Length: 289
Ligand code: ATP
Ligand code: MG
Image 1 (tube, rainbow, N blue to C red):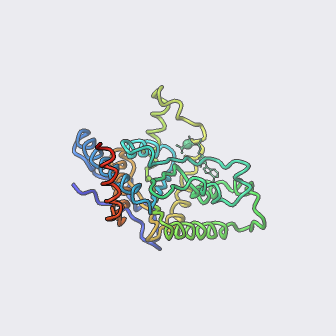
Image 2 (image 1 turned 90 degrees about the vertical axis):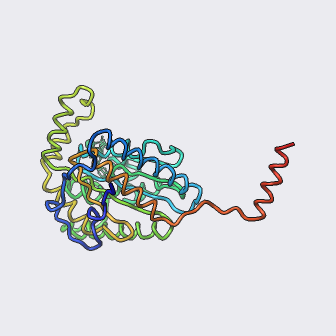
Image 3 (image 1 turned 45 degrees about the vertical axis):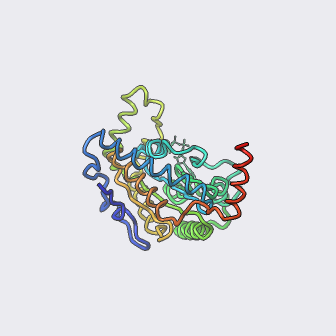
């Protein structure tokens, strides 16, 4: 079955109302075994394309994952990237900025983590937090040492969207393909998952009391996400809203989206020129004596 991702894509300039975007879908698989089979197929294709990306050495791919707590970012990364050569893939998680990072513009720390040509980079949270958590918590913005902070902070978010769009367009022109995924989980499903973290001793470590506080700000986060998705989805760096109430389906969507991003690239293995052929044949002779 072909998994359709087109409907999950936010079109450039589209105004997003998350209540209208599904958090649940009819399962993309018929059984757990069938899920594992589809995922295996995706991963094996991804692995082959990643090798081609590496050999071709012109493009890189950056996958950005954003979501509310317990939406399944970590699991998606773990399962989708399993089986990919670790040399060709890097994952970075972005938490609260350090003092050093706060002494620079908000994109500075991103630069040090961008995937090199030939590689896939994954951001577990990203610079998008700058218009999400920072927007929901005005005290964070107040602590960012910015000069001339306007009283009405609306302009700040607009400026940041512009910086993000410009940054992504610049990266695109230079060979990076940016694809952004919002794992869209319902508040009820989050409640179940947080309870599971309390009930299951092996998951206790994942439970953070802060998660409950952020949950109380659900509406504010939703509004911030809606504004952000509407302002920063572009043709070259699109956002996808992936229904995430079913973790397994979400993983199949994510792997399919990364796969399509790689398939869309016009890549081939570097050609062997006649001179190089001669050189290789000469080397063969040396090895054969
Ligand atoms: P998960 O991403 O699975 O929730 P976590 O909570 O264990 O992981 P941490 O590294 O402890 O991860 O924290 C991530 C926290 O850092 C999140 O609450 C996020 O909102 C916050 N954060 C990320 N970027 C920024 C930023 N630029 N400014 C302020 N807070 C940020
Ligand atoms: Mg957390």
